[in-house]
Length: 155
Image (cartoon, rainbow, N blue to C red; front, side, top):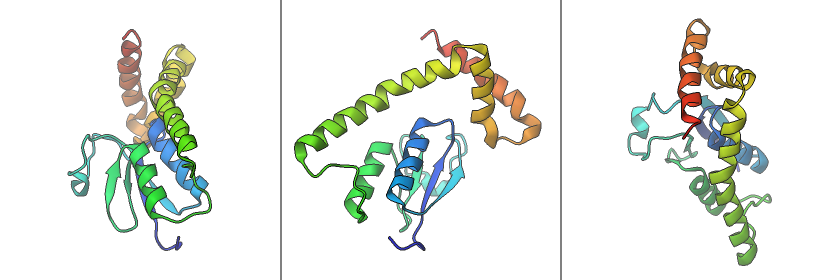
């Protein structure tokens, strides 16, 4: 891939799927820009994307989409690389897809528990996730978000 062609990831460090895509593009050694983004500030150029969740990846040709598994499958199909993440063997590809789906659905539950169960983790996680917010309001917004997330732990 030409180094002048860049992907753009609209994501957030608090989003495991954003971090998954960032790690994937790093593994592929494809150039990208990381744009800190939240679902509440949706750019007009991404109005066609449903559901409105991050990450959104803009491809070098301007096409944009979300949903991390579909992004990876599209990149694997359209961009040549010696570093494939989808095995050529169909049986192995199925097992890899099954493991990825399980991780997407269940490892995030573990992540949620690790972020929001103990007070020390709640304090750190809320500030870490809100690091894209200006410093004069970060702590206030982080505390509101922390309360919302901790209240969801019972669910």
